[in-house]
Amino acid sequence: MNDSLKMYNDFSDVASGEQFISCDAVLEVLKKYSSTISVFDLMAVNAEMIDESKYVHDSYKDKSHEIYAKYFLGRIKDISGDNTHYSHDIDKEEFIDAVATLKSYHINESISSKTKFPLIYGIVSIYTTFVLEEPIHPVGTPFPGSLFVEEKDGKFYCPVKDANMETPNAVCKMCIAEQLEF
Image 1 (cartoon, rainbow, N blue to C red):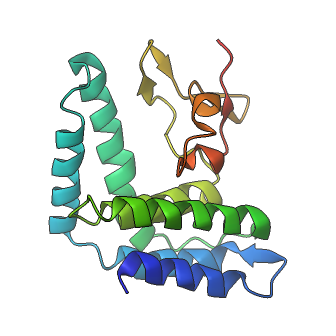
Image 2 (cartoon, rainbow, N blue to C red):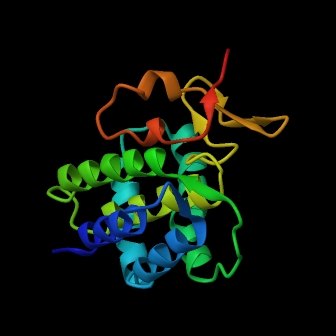
């Protein structure tokens, strides 16, 4: 069994028998699996991300890649060094749904990805959503049409959330951002 599937099983163990899930317990699982990711793994995922964006318009591609590299790949280091005690609990139903979505994504993507992208995707999505309570795409992430993820009065807004809610395996379902009205 690969690391991603082991991680999702560990999350199931954390959630079993509890109404609310300890944020610290989830962080411990995330730390365990983020420690399996080497700098070489991060470099390979970065190269894969660059390759997958080769058909994206240059003005959008450069800014989005900068944000993805910083907040997606950089979060792996943040997780390993996060010694914060988080006092909030995680809603069990939302967490179980998110883990099921990510596990399904992993099963579908691990066939085509030759890197640890599916594992990193799962780790960062869970950390950002449930531990940090932030949107998966950070504030400022550009989307086509000169639209961005925004924060207003402590709430996060995404210009593409509603458009992706029915997309299989989309993390938009678990993201705390609301639809940006434009």
